[in-house]
Structure formats: structure tokens, C-alpha cells
Length: 443
Image (tube, rainbow, N blue to C red):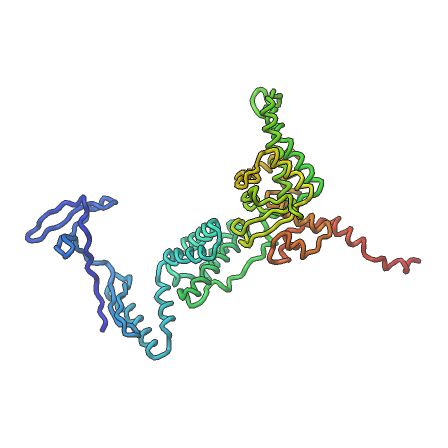
């Protein structure tokens, strides 16, 4: 037996409502947030006086394939539309009884009608259970919301590969880079893969959307520093704080010297030493900015048989945790830094890594006379120091397998093809060491 009707909804009387009487009936009159006047009849229920109103949407009450009584909103305001939708559901129930469909497949159809926001909340809980970072969850959610809003994907059933591909092509034409475009494609595929595993989608509609080649449209290609540039950058990082403190930067006294107190000179020198060691640690260890910012004094073991630092799993990008050996010269400088700065407390950070470190690096590069971008438009930023670590390993004959371990990569192709920037002279030197096969052919 199937029944289609609109439910009667009972609600508490608003505090600001005015009670009026019309004949034998009483009504509550009030204004909503938009200033519209609302009038509802008042009835007496078991819970006291309540306003009564009829739901705008039709509801269907029916028995499913297992004989369980179900009540489900059609989302339709017109009876004919509600009856059409109810007939579709009843047809599915008959197919389940006949063995044509399974109950799980029927559940997929139901969940496809849920709003995307409901699925997004469940997806975020799924990501939290996986242990990914809050930043990843925030960025992933933001991109999914942007795509669903622009493409009008209000429900999972609305998702279409043709619509998403059209939007991606439009964004590319408007200037979106290939890597950014691929990131939007990736998050939508990830979201729908989860929906399939959650029995909310029968298949992933975006799985066959092609991935564009990033190599032909790379907007932010990094380069590694040469050994000479590394030395110049470290010297500049150490000297610039004192230079900036003792020279007027603007005004009528621009470029004039300032007489500093011994305390101000000591403070500037300490800041310069910290910045120098900060860059040196990036280059010698290949740590990422957030990873180095997490290192405390208790994670640095300078007196061990093999001096090293320990990167905790919660602070590493891969969430595995790592032990990184330290260069002998860096060990000596870190020992001096800890003693000079009094950072012997285990809970204190090894370095103060400011959020605006990228701007500090830009000024240090300028002070060192190193171009931010080269003739090929390749850029030097904080992450380029990690590229420098990989490149120096390759230039010094470190095997690809060891370099992969040092970089903490899961794929050796990432180490060799993206992070190792061998210049033409490196390849030329390698080619020149090949055996001489032409000597015997000389006339």
C-alpha cells in the first residue's frame, strides 16, 4: 500500500509572535528575518500549544523489498511529479524482488539524490580518519565546492564528465595553468572514488577525463642554486641583518650610517647567523619549510655516533617519520648556534621559521646579487633549496637510490626528473669521461 501526502508540521510559537483570534481559531503572527509577515494557526498538542503548517513537499509512505515500512520525501511540490517519482521507486522495489537489482544498488540511487554538502561532510570525516593534514582537507574541500558551484552539481546525480571537462577547458582558456587544472581534476576523481566506495555512486563519472601535460605549461618551474650561488646566499644571509640595521633605508638620510649600540649589533649578528644556518639546513638536509619549522632541540642529536635529526611522523609530508644525517660542518655550526642562543631546552624550536620567509629570501637573493628568475624564467624560492639538495647529490655522484632515500621520495622518477637539475656542463663532463673509441681511426 502506497500513500502520497504532505506532512503536517508542528512548531513552537515564536517568542515575538502576536496572538490573534478569528472566529473560534487562534493564530500566531510574526515577521521572519526578511521582514515578511507569517501567520500560522495555533493548536493544542501533547507538548502544549504549537503552530501548525503543511509541508510544501509531498512525502511517500511505502513498503520496501524487505517488507519494511519507509517514509521518503519526494522533494516535489506538485502531486503529479511526486506520483511519478514514487512510481520509479516502486518499480525499483519490484526489480529487487525479481532479482534484477540488489538492495545495495537501490541504496546507491537513493544516496545520489542527497545534496553534495551532505556527502562532503562525510568525505571530510573520511580524510580525517586517514590522518591527512588539516590544510589538505581545507584545500580539497575548497576546490570541490568551487567546481560544484560553477558546474551546478547540487547532487551526486548531477555530476557529468562533459560539464566538468567544459569547465576545465574554460578555465585553461582564461589562464589556469596545467598543474592547477590537473589538481581540480584530481580532487573530483578522488571525491567520486570515495562516493563509489561509500555506495553513493554506481561508478566514477570523471575517471576518463584526460590529464593534461604539465611539462608544456609549467608556470612555476624551479631551479637549483649552483655551489657558488649557495656560498653567496649564505654570506648575504649572515651579513644583511647588520647592514639593514646600520643603514637608513628611506627618507632624507637614506644610505647614511646609523650608530648602533653593542646590544643592537649582537642582536643583528645573531639574526644573521640563524638565517644562514636556516638556509644551510635546508640545503644539507632537503627538509621542507614546515618540516624544519617543527624541529625542536630534542630532535637534534649532535653527539651521536652519526649526528642526525629526527623528523616526527606527524610533521612529515608522507606521515612516515624520518632520521636525517647531518653534514659534519653543519653539526659544528649547529652546536655553536645552540650554545650561543641558549636553546638547550628540549621543547624549544631549533630555528624561528617566519611565515614570511619567502619574502626574506627574496631580499637575501637581491643582496647576494642572485637573480630571482633566470633567462628561462625558472625561479628560486624556499622549495628550490630542496631542489638544490637533490642536485648537489647528483652532481657529487650519489647513486639514484641513495638520493631517493635522502629526498624521502616514494618514486625515484620524482627524484631524478623533477628535483635533480643537472646543467649542460655536468652532462658534458660525464660524456667526456667515456672511452676513446676513435683514437685508432686517426690517419
